[in-house]
Image (cartoon, rainbow over all chains, first blue to last red):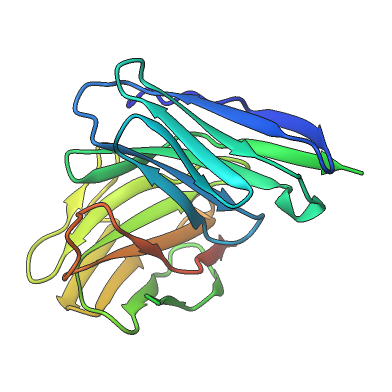
Length: 108
Length: 118
């Protein structure tokens, strides 16, 4: 497999900040996706990192370290609607391989 | 924006029958489409890469004779689950990469098809 690891579940409070980590195998690596998926729906695109560093898009930011095989998704000002699964996916060799996903529960 | 549709959105079939799922790119041409399968509380597992005008490339462990893929045009790929069994019950999702895209990793997902085999 592609050895993509991310936590299974996380719980955070509305209004708080949460960081979801993802580690992956670096061989043949091209880039790293983050997707959001609500239950029973298809994934929706959040970010795609190819270069090292932090990319910010509103309340969501994504970080990549190519040398460490590490990425994280940062969600700020959490809202109840952010309760979903967050999928980390690596690209390489013309394919996108998904991690198992992190189920985030946002509580009031 | 790039829109991908799937039909049907859900289907129930009897064990032993075949089911065809369509994936269409509505406002762009897609040389490459991908088929994924997702079991409850699990992530997307890539089944195969579908290329227009050529045979699909299947991932290890996916039976090509059971999951028939046809990509006859630049806007349509079909997945046929043959001789379906209850263990084939799953959420099937396709994605499409625009032919005009500068990145082979740009992909847009369809809404998914929930298959239940009884």
